[in-house]
Length: 47
Image (cartoon, rainbow, N blue to C red):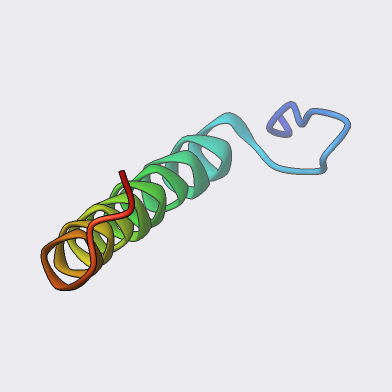
């Protein structure tokens, strides 16, 4: 029996794997952005 796929063409397992990596990338990007903002704030406070 063939795996069911969604409109994206991914199977459930592929979608879960993609979601895992997407969330990891988002958390990494957010962490880098927070650190960058803290460093800029320490250098030149804007408020």
